[in-house]
Image (cartoon, rainbow, N blue to C red):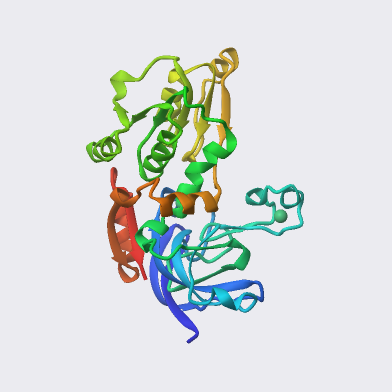
Length: 321
Ligand SMILES: [Zn+2]
Ligand SMILES: [Zn+2]
């Protein structure tokens, strides 16, 4: 067997192929059969040129190890995997900031074939074994949940904090659940009735545009990746408060920087986060991602899956090879 099925992204166009090269693994890598993979906003942005990537997209996955020569005990185990493949020797790697490695490749995003295929490869050191009994449908959320938890890695959310989350999409609802666990006074600006219903089912307070508090929030998490979302964050945060940017922005965004200076607002960019705690939270049932699942589609109709995921208000679309 030397070819496999997968989605192929080239020049902003996505195609289904059944003759893609089978991943070749080096000594320290594992060959993984993909059980389930999720489409996220980054995948949709790749289609629109967020990063010039040519190859198999997809970075949120759960799969089964087919072979791992350097650690045969992993064979047959279900795993999730960190998406940044670091060089281990640059200044960032040496200082423990492996997700910022200057020589990194990124699964399905940068110089590394991704998860929308029958098989993928990753270094063994990137893998986390999924506890028995934790369903694929839940484990597949480990990567975006880890990204949500990066907020708590970067800042101390205190139980007494007033917190506004702007945006309740695929990532936003995971962020909301982790923030709620801190005990903070959380409100979420959610645009769509379905998002509002999911949040309410978790007993998380929802606000609409007319009820956003003015200059009063200790922390605002901006998870829309839009200029409008940033403007709302800027208006809602108290002077001396913090805005966390949790989403990438299409193109350039106009920002009122004077406001940020005069009101001494702290701005924090936030990307990939820790897998081990994310997996623990999923296994312990502290976060429930299941209400996020919109649909699960076969690899062969992956283009339809992307079209579905791109519709406004649609949450997580899964691809099952
Ligand atoms: Zn993602
Ligand atoms: Zn490095």
